[in-house]
Length: 364
Image (tube, rainbow, N blue to C red; front, side, top):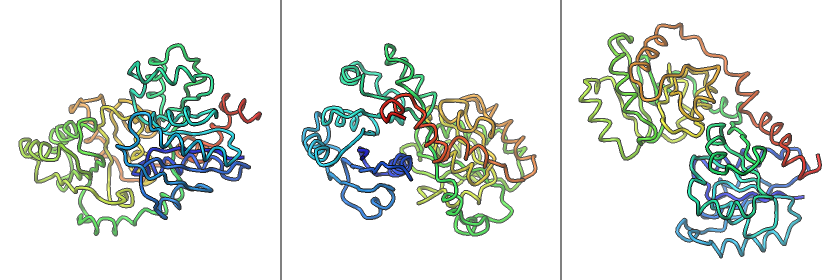
């Protein structure tokens, strides 16, 4: 028996999402065929997909707009060649392709808010509702989707958290001194880090304001290190200058495989105001960093029981937590239990096969 696995693309972070769902079927009788609608064939992507077979349809994003008839025809031919039990489709477009190209039950995975906020987007999924399970990456995304699809039974809109290969991520981490050397950080610098796109959703402006308020009470050698690029880079740099903290803030730009350097940091802060999940938080937990996170969306669920939460958009609250954290001993936080129990491949596999839709489908 085969599982058809349709992804829009393999660009970060979706290659890892593909790996996560293929890993659900490790040591099972099911073989996974992963199909990427867009993107050219790539041997590294094949290896990273953790699938039994990978198919690249090779479309551009522009080519799969509208009804995506070409993709539908190719998926239909593929389905005729195997004994597929069901399909997993990530995001709305691959879900539409799966529904129109096949008669298979579809597990539709959603990584963002508002996927079905528009009436026109709800028409097709409502028509095919009896063969769809909606899986959301956090309870926050799930609850919003239940509001948009109010007449759907609750058991058809569920949560399956994103996860990491905990051991693999930890093995990829550079030792603290090496990571600091590569990032050009002094050994005695107290480093507060933020990793993410420089975009309004990530709200680094609140981070800068909270840091500016806290700075007089932080260690004298404190640095705020911001990794990432985006449309707000110049605006955020101007804000740092306006707040008089430019000398204590470094915008490091895009750092490939940034998670490898996490042991260089002393504290990780995420200020997002619209975070469906926050994979970067799992990576920070794998590095056993203390974490401060806004109390908004899926990020708050990820760090619950591990990190500190501040009121969304409140630099005063953030400032007080930055100061308090800087005064605590720098012992490593223990994240092992939380990661293995909630955010590991094994935990996801156990939860997935207990879902009523999957149990009924596979006669478990």
